[in-house]
Image (cartoon, rainbow, N blue to C red; front, side, top):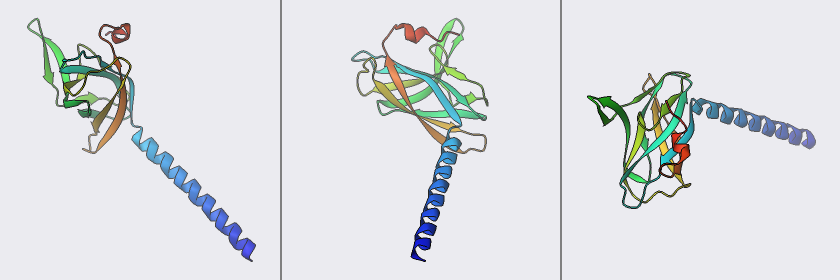
Length: 163
């Protein structure tokens, strides 16, 4: 009788583990609605107070990038650059739309993330943490943690993604 009880307990434990694993995988898939690729930050020389972060972002459903944060900068803003009257202008963008299934490129000369009031110089090759806030049409938000590699000024990697 005791052996049956132990066998039943072991079976119950296996079922609990399988259920926990299934729930964990489901939770992971729920948060995998946004994919970020090619994240990088332009290198900054000592004394430089601002730089840009760039990346490719794809959402499985309609969404918007509404905020970005990083511990290396006092101020982080989502920006847009555009040509107006033969002059390149840059302004804070309240959001960047992420149409379902379409890759949106944040790149030099277009949408990008500005890192301002840098707290330290950025060394080529180091990783910069970014936290992106994504908002869905139902106003629910999720955050996506990204590691962006610092690339030196003028490197060939910087010019990989031309429009």
